[in-house]
Length: 394
Image (cartoon, rainbow, N blue to C red; front, side, top):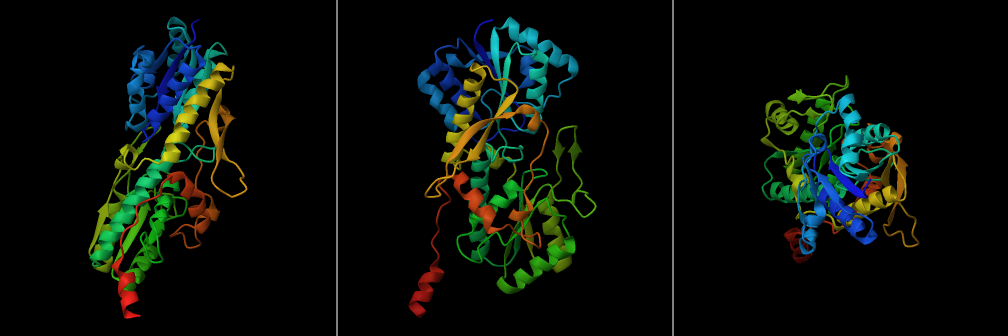
């Protein structure tokens, strides 16, 4: 068997998924022991169809573009594999001289990673590269993709907050992705620069959503300041565990959520008689390269490099994880480690209680401190004429 590598992307892309791909290519070149770095075009379906492209054919001077290319350069999928599909893969790998298989994705992809590893029976080294804007993969402190999406959401809410503040006549509900985990929704707290800044309310899927409490919260804030910005997770559920808005469509692995922002804005209009609107950035946040976090991009590259290094050292059935290092000055540093794939297959890491306030309509300072380093350069500062007005009056 030749020393070829196969990279497979699974699930929704992130702003830095191609940075991990770049990391794999870079490590392959630096190692000097790899002939071809195949990308499976279109995810796992591309494996079964043997639709591979040798990424080493990309001119060296153009590979850097992967660092700032959104979506998945080699394509991705949510293709559901059957037992027979896994059984075919060892033969396909052998046919193409593939010794190392790297899967870049979230919970479902790590499950696939473990099953491919089992099917190969040690003849191929299979390693997972973590990727998700939801940050819901178990064991690892955080995942590449999250920091950039968090920066996008915080920046967008900061901009929306300035708009609503300048024309204080309504309530704006911004819906965040993240499924059953509130990590991304919670990151909107980083939009706050001063007391009273947006977001004024944050609702997470980890706590049951109470419509009456929501309306009370909104009414109290609106009466006091004339405008309210709410950030709500797409995965909000009521006390019985039912989605507050019926999903549009479900599959075994995915849920296509209903429009939570429009629903909550409608509640405000009908029940409180206050002008309201919903905003749903949706996939904009996972495709936005201008909001890409430098920290996130660098860690994505590192994850790709470390995945291939682990495979070449004989490791299989592991995922590359991140953990924070203690530093004298308390500046942010992270290191990689290898997580047994069985510890992350289809496990979902949700936001812990210590990061959520008692009423369930905001996050704590502890969360803000945890999240802040991951978004890299932060978000832009805006001018506030209020402070100059106060200086003149004083």
